[in-house]
Each structure stands twice: as structure tokens, then as C-alpha cells.
Length: 274
Image (cartoon, rainbow, N blue to C red; front, top):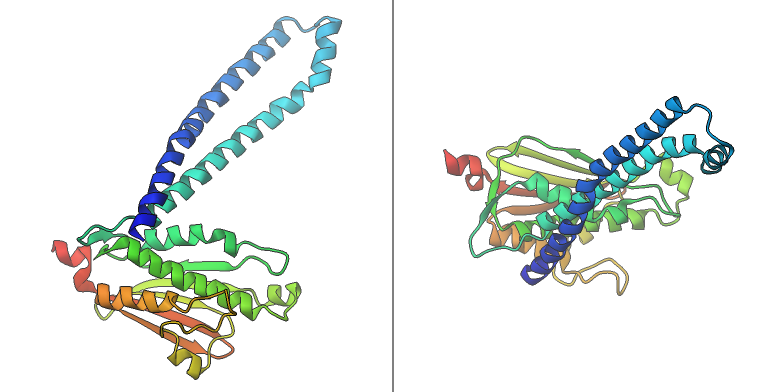
């Protein structure tokens, strides 16, 4: 994960340079366009009767349409640049290489960066509408941790929820799924001096037998080639052995599954800085 984190962070850094140049020049390009259109308008006022050649050219290029569409193009370019910047920032946050010591980390940034990276799996497709991600964040202190490893935990749990929802859609029509939309609810809160993160889906849930094996290494309910049975086992190891926290699972067959990550507040920045 450390080597992969360095690689992704390096790629994200290389993306930042050209996209920064593009985004930074969009506003200047808009100003230049406004200046040029202003000069054209000035010519129109000073010479209201252009000759036939200019008149034909104005009709050919459809100046009114260009004037209207140019602003839309510039806005789309800026939105696209901002989107790439956001993705690059999320990649950097997600792939933070861990040092030998723990760092203070904003858990919400880690969760949000992971959701953004998984966005291609959340989008609507021919089989189902988009999966709705609902976030309810409380005011959490930063926690002292290995950020890259916790981001891996978020990735494993969220990807598992998406897999569960896709599996629960088997045999259901697009309209049926729309009537009962796929949802993942992410909540953060402090309870009994513990920082908690809840990630719940409304898929088909698990039987007690499956639930008891959820964190076992090499156990998976996915078809051959679809899962290794290591993701949740590694997630528990990172949370409990590396960070002294707790990772638990609640599931009701036919209703959905919830994973709860919790850390003692003694690891938080608020406690450390008091």
C-alpha cells in the first residue's frame, strides 16, 4: 500500500501541474473573449451599416450564437478542470503514504476521497439507477492514525457494500430498483468517548452463519474471481491490531448490513492537544 500510495501521489502531482495551468487560464481566456466581443460591439455601434462581405460573414458564423455558446463552453471547461482538481486532491488524500509514526487525520476527508474514487461504481448504468450515498457527519476531532491504512478500510467496506447492492439487484427490474433505491448511509458520531463511523447498505443482508464468518480470512460469498476473502479481514486487522479500535458488523437478512468502526477518543487530536 505504501508503494502504491507513492505511485498514485506522484501521478496526482503530475496531473496537478497541467490542470493548474488550464484552470488558471480559463478566467483570463473569458476576460479576453469579453474584450474581443466588446470591440465587435463597438464596431457595430460606430459602423451600423457594414458592407456586404462583412454582413455575409456575420451571418455565416452566427455571432449571436457564438456569443451565447462561448460562455457555456468556458463554464464547462472550468467545471471540468475543477472536477479533475477535486479528483486529484482525493487521490492524494486517499493514497497518503504512511510514515513510521501516526499522523493526525481528518476522517471525513478520508471517507469523501474514497467515495469519489468509487464514483464510477456508484453511477447509474443499464441495469440500475445510481446508488445513493447519504452522509451524516458529526463534528469529529482529528485522530492520530496511519491515514493510508484507514483509507484502505473505508475502501474495502464501501466496495463491499456496492457489491452487496449489485448482488441484491439480481432478478429485479430497473423500475423495481427505482421504487426501492440502492442506498449507502455513512454516519459519524461520538458516543461514550468513542469516535464511531457507521457504513450501512440496504442490500439483502446476511444470515447469522455468514455474518459469523464475515471477517474470516479467505471467506467470501462472491463467485470465483470476484472476491479474495481478504478485504474485510485486512480491514479488521488494521482497525483493531494497528489502531486499537474495533470493527463490528450488524446485519438483518432481507434488510441490509452495517459496519461500525470505532476508536477511543484518547487517540483524537482534541484529547492530545488539551
